[in-house]
Amino acid sequence: EPEVTQTPSHQVTQMGQEVILRCVPISNHLYFYWYRQILGQKVEFLVSFYNNEISEKSEIFDDQFSVERPDGSNFTLKIRSTKLEDSAMYFCASARSGLSGANVLTFGAGSRLTVL
Amino acid sequence: DAKTTQPTSMDCAEGRAANLPCNHSTISGNEYVYWYRQIHSQGPQYIIHGLKNNETNEMASLIITEDRKSSTLILPHATLRDTAVYYCIVRVGAAGNKLTFGGGTRVLVKP
Image (cartoon, rainbow over all chains, first blue to last red; front, side, top):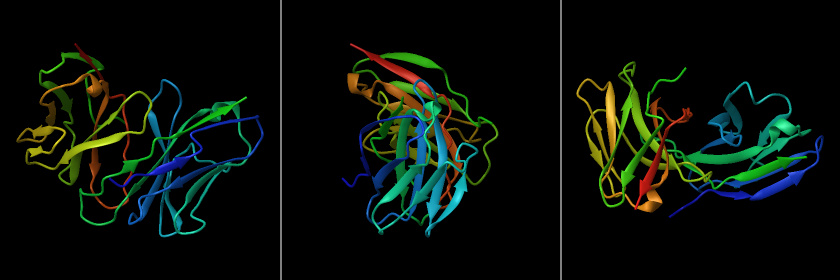
């Protein structure tokens, strides 16, 4: 069964450093998403991406965050200058276009980011 | 801004059916009901979705009331591996729309 692949599975970084989290969505999917989950809290939407541009973003997705689809297969989330509160599990998801209601999101296993 | 209400937690016995309720009294005509689950900090996993008819797949059944104000997810024979947080989400089914997760129901399947 096709799956969304995320790397790294765990990254530890120092506060103020830049981090790039990578995702390989399912190959025929056209809609891409990033979510995060702080330990013990809800899964929170960050951003959605379609046709090489951001479709929607949440208040969390401020100027420190950016997304890119650099080569037609990868979808990346960059955090420019990490803060302690960025420590979380980050999930990538993708979805096909098409039929209303059938736009099911498939999630990756996540990348755990620890900021020291 | 929660559109759904679910019990915080519930237990069920291994091998028995697990019935997970969800209230969505303000659901709009073009909103679908989706169910996802999250097993111990893994990525959310899609289970099933429906608009107004009952649905069944290899994982579960979804029963939606006629007025669409509530639904029940049924896991027909719960196993220990079904222990997870289950999320009921209402969402317009248009392509590209995000999912908004609430607190979900923490289900513990006991031997």
